[in-house]
Amino acid sequence: MNAKLKVCLNAGLVFCWWLCGVIAMMIFQGETFITSSYVVMQIVTTIGYGDVPVSHWMYWFFTIYVLVGIVIVANIINDFSDSLLDKGVDRLSSSMKSLQHRVGGMDSDDENEHDKAVTGAAFDLGAAALIFFAFVLFGVIFYSLLEYCSCSYGVTSIDGCDASSYDSCVRTNGATKSWADCVYMSVITLTTVGFGDVSPKSTWGRLIAVFWMLFGVLSSANLVEAIGTFIQKAFKESDKKTNNRLAFDDLDHAGTGRISKAQFLAWMLVKEGYVKRENIKLFFSLFDKMDANHNGKINYSTLKKHFHAEDDEDESMAMLG
Image: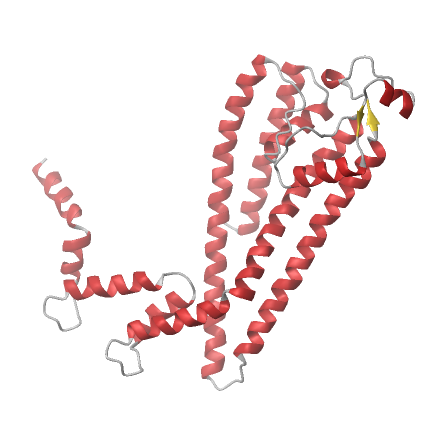
């Protein structure tokens, strides 16, 4: 299936899941569309403030709702894993093309390529950090100006609170937010910790929070990925080069300084990170044990004996049946 189509289908699936939760809250809880959207988005983004109480009937609904959500998330994770595998294949293809250019006599500077990779990763990290902190800054400014004191509404309305002025709101125990509170709430929210001790209270605050939480959490995930990529490019490449040399030495059993085509295949798998060096050693050790004639070759019947013996047993049982 086309990658873009998968993304669209997953987005549609999540939207339908979110919409079902919103409709259920509106019908069974009697909440407004904004409050319902606000609560369900907490579930979708795993923030979970817990600041809006729900009835016992809704306990049962959300229990089932979250379990269904696990299935949806599992499907998305599976597609994401496939996407990572496709990226790995593309990376291997790109590496092969680069190697072909080198073998063909085109100039190539490993150090320069490494510097470019680190620079690119640093740029991506900077962009991801800028986007994330832009969402944090938006939360700080928006909620410090809109909700410096709020009496809330609906089931979370504060009894006896007077919102006619800031002084009267504070005097009648309205929910206040300082700049520090807004910084704290923004970071805790966008990193999906969601303690719930400081959360949006007003109608507009919760409406904006529906979109702010969704895209802010995505920016947080993007930042985490960018940090991991930068660390990989900047600090682990030297270890990778050392590991590549050790893998070559492991494959060069005769110590000739040369490897065969099959050994080159094994080395490339280690180099690109698809197989660990230790596993390659185990594979060759296993091959040596199965090579009864010690001629460096084994036939398929030997492989079938060791890896597919259960298939013969199943066929025998089927014939007896």
